[in-house]
Amino acid sequence: MKEVRGCGMRSAVGFLSRRTIGGQPRLKEEFQRRRLAGCSSLFKKDMLGHFGCVNAIEFSNNGGQWLVSGGDDRRVLLWHMEKAIHSRAKPIKLKGEHLSNIFCLAFDSTNKRVFSGGNDEQVILHDVERGETLNVFLHDDAVYGLSVSPVNDNVFASSSDDGRVLIWDTREPPHGEPFCLANYPSAFHSVMFNPVEPRLLATANSKEGVGLWDIRKPRCSLLRYGGSLSLQSAMSVRFNSQGTQLLALRRRLPPVLYELHSRLPSFQFDNQGYFNSCTMKSCCFAGDHDQYILSGSDDFNLYMWRIPSDPEAGGPGRVVNGAFMVLKGHRSIVNQVRFNPHTYMICSSGVEKVIKVWSPYQQPDSVGDLEGLVEDKSRSLYTHEEYISLVLNSGSGLSHDYVSQSVQEDPRMMAFFDSLVRREIEGWSSDSDSDLSEGAILQLHARTRRPTHATRSMPRSSANVSAAHHSDSDHSSSSSLAGQDASGSEPLQILLNWELKKKKVWHLV
Image (tube, rainbow, N blue to C red; front, side):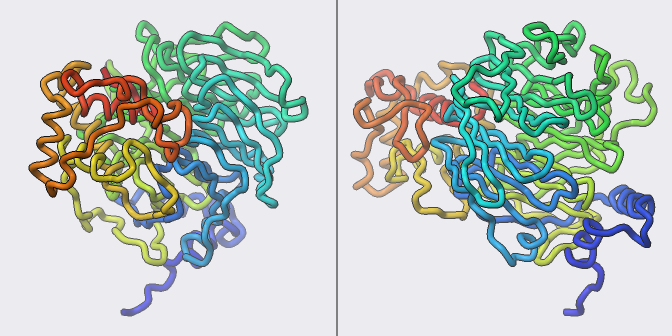
């Protein structure tokens, strides 16, 4: 095959990330801008290294040479992007390991330290060069969001399931009391310092929606976004690079854009097929001037919208209907997305074990095209019965065993999230499966599998399980499952609800 010159990482993205074109930065920016604007799709490539769902990804500052990632396998991985895309280097595993799922990550401004937080109620501070753990900051509940101050690398904010937003100083003793900025009865899912006005922070709360806070005036928000609809279930919030706009995600609603000091939305963004209900997701701005936004979807796609330059666009509802680009290639729900403005590279992740890299430049072993003419092989959703059979046949009860250290696709995990999608589509209530007893499911299992499997049953004794916040490999379960008897249990609902407790996903009702 004839080599296509000028399309590889080293000749295109690597060049652009290290140099200007002809010494003129504006020429480089214009080139990148026009390149993306002319695309209908992007080249894509998978990076393999995790053994479970990838729940958090972040590019390093000042060029995005590195990517840090974390997930259900409890490991923090550091990727040198150019080497990883060329398959010349595996990711570096930082030595500090969490006890449960990782939910959030952050670099400091120098890229010498990484913060990681998660379901084990702690934030770990890692030294990037040596891989060592520098400090541990204990919380009272799961940590969902992290943000480092743009003017002081020793100060970071955390948002937690206990309804608090805390401001920490790494120079203080770790057992000391942090500064409490906010304290609500409901969980804070996201927090971010304003990159230009560091006294301001934005938050996303599970019941109170999106808020703006001033660190000088704790316990009371400056602004509640959304107008009369401010009490919404929000999961992610991001400032643009100038700190003048906020992008937020809300459950069962399209992404929304706010001007910093305006309660009412500037725009909402929608597209046929886009849906955000089953999992916790993040969003981000994209483009050299933050002229695009990105969000993953329950339909396995990644959506990019262009922010209108006309403030009156979208009509009275200010709804931008129609995405600029729909990126197809994931095989399950897309939860996380980040954009690198220096290379115009996008990374996305979610239920799968892969980190997908998208670029307007062809990379080694990448697939797809820029016109969207190359179609990916689609897969059928697993049925509820197939999910239950996969659990019963897994040999590990309700645990997720990462000891095998496999980077291959996990059918059981895919089936679990497929069941969430189906449950949302079917509009289940908590008693929707009351007619399905454990015995009935086991009979179905026996009919579809070998007879020797028919006697297998779900764990019943709490002696065989541990607390819900322990790691997935600890054979965890919920008390509702342990205490069920065969005559009245709802196995599918119980399985789903138990797994929901283990993951950063919504408790559907």
